[in-house]
Image (cartoon, rainbow, N blue to C red):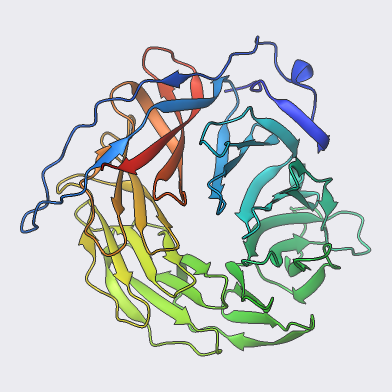
Length: 446
């Protein structure tokens, strides 16, 4: 798929003009009526679920796309405004909703790859991306009603060429921000190790000078606590930054060989999911590092297929945690742990007998959970979802996309303050075979 979607370019963006990027006329976004949502039987042995999940109308953010759309990110602030960021062809684009939940027109932020996005408690959205061909790392921030000018974060080193890859980004409630990535001082094909580097921005200031943390390494995850202490997990080492800006001697990290997921909670706690990937079904193990600096004993949650390479996990500010993964016989299961409690048995969320793929997981400040996955024929997958309100049971799964979509990919999920979940995906409708970036909101029925 080749070409560009119609969009505006914000001030300071490193983008071509829409006229130079596409030969197709602009196609307005449009909203489709809500679709009928088929019900599935509850898993055997479980009581009927009383809360009903309803899917709203489909809203198309970008239509007639002729470029690959990947790296779709979705964040929602405390006021309920959602920001979507994605890579389309060679450009980074973004779109935002109004307070009423209506999507605005996409804008081009820059030429680049692999965007990451986070939002702080004040609603400031930070996007970090790699320049094309890995020629540096750049940040842009939405604040005070506009996208700020780009900030070049690339580690300054006397080299004729360099290559960056694999950024990880985190922010705490007040807005302290940490980003880490791997940077090679030489072209990508040069036989030279990739350095682990990081940059920090205080909540009330600008990005500080990028520093090298290790002679070799790639970040698995990054996190900050409420006072701005930062942590960067890279393989078997945990790098730590003090509130005074000093990086301490790294600690050994107690993790398994293959990393399935690594997340933080903005309070200094880390959750790492390990997979023992070989040529057989593999156990899912959780390792947790508390803000006081200790690793808890690992806990085995269940078993997933040997083809699984990553699993979504969430860890909130109150230390409630959840992990979603496809079990060996197909369905999606979610294991949860209350704050200060023990991990419970994984609960199957999708219908029995389905073969689920690409699970996504999101949590709300009150402890509510949402899970998203694809199922059905691999060449024509359907998108399904379920919610678990705080203190209640999982809803029945609902179908987000059905027969009117030929295929879907790049699913993304985010919670809104009103308890609804925003779903975003890339797909191709049956009656209008053009690739679209579409969204839908899921709400609990009254």
